[in-house]
Image 1: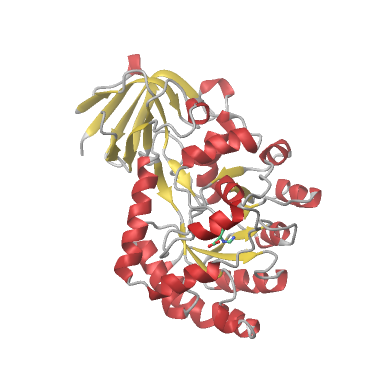
Image 2: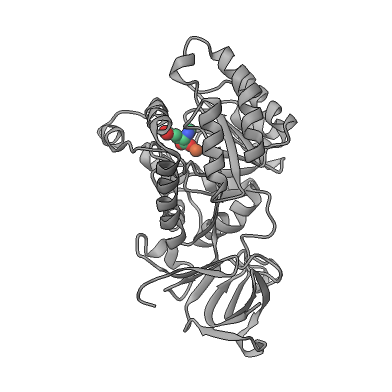
Amino acid sequence: MTATLVTGIGELVTNDPKRGEGSLLGIERDAAVVVDGDRVAWVGAASDAPDADERLDVEGRCVVPGFVDSHTHLVFAGERSAEFAVRMAGESYTGGGIATTVAATRAASDEQLRQNARRLLAEMVASGTTTVEIKSGYGLTVDDEARILRIAREFTAETTFLGAHVVPPEYEDAREDYVELVTGSMLEACAPHARWVDVFCDAGAFDEGEARRVLQAGMEAGLLPRLHGNQLAEGPGVRLGVEVGAASVDHCTHLTDRDVEALAGSDVVATLLPGADFSTRAPYADARRLIDAGVPVALATDCNPGSSFVTSMGWCIALAVRELGMTPAEALYAATAGGARALRRDDIGSIVDGASADLVVLDAPNHVHLAYRPGAPLVRAVWRRGSLVYRHESV
Ligand code: NIG
Ligand code: FE
């Protein structure tokens, strides 16, 4: 295996609480990192760095852990820009457009779905994402949900069964039958291709009782629970997530004080999706309130063609700083270590000895530039599991 010394790092964000004098990001200045195979083998001051087979000087730039995008719906067909335009003219988001994507996805070939996901994933990698979670949820038949998860597995181990996204049109008058299908033969076909089970528990989607059945059935089949909740209105999503021990409740746009207390007294991560709040013209989730109450927070893109056609975690960080009340350090932590926690992973989201070598070089002197220069293409190079997977053409 070749060991590479990355040196000349002006600011290194490690997310290691033992470094950086107790600061959230564990920042080391004038630092170096040794990457050996797919792992980080050494972290410290550039002046103390050991020898390595190869050496790369990043000339004072900032290096951060690869972003962990813990919530996406990447396997789908079609797009819904017309729906977005109508929304920006004043109409509200109800989730009704999901059926449009379901129809397009069912009609698409495996290769079309694969190519669309690959194209979006390339955008994500170029913007610094090194781990991505992918949900099903645009098939809503046994065969289509299973094929979406099979395709998702080609890209990531973090796959999520979301057969309970909405009740599909053909079950409109038979929702009980659909819940039976999701918790029965659909789950059986999908569980081998998934790590997680998810449900959209919200106004117009699945109610508390239905959502509980979906999550419990998934857990009995060996999947770990997470859910979409409190996106469209206040409701039972958060409390159900706490009850079943979900890794994360995602959206959390509309929370009562009781919800915040329930999250604070649990191990559940609140995953905030500012791209969805932006693209549905919803109020932004209140990260400040959650962080001040002691709730662990993650940021993710929610990439999907309806509510958030967003691939850039950097842009989510900028929105989170401007609109969700986060500091630049909190937002970067949420997009890296927070996402790792939401996926219950301790090998990603930080730059420490033994961690997966997921590193992003920014053309910036420090991490604040992620929010300070929104929209600028700051990512110069990306290593995923020790392999250089993206290099900006100017490098
Ligand atoms: O996370 N909330 C439910 N599902 C997606 C939106 C899906 C769609 O509109 O196509 C979300 O926002
Ligand atoms: Fe989502």
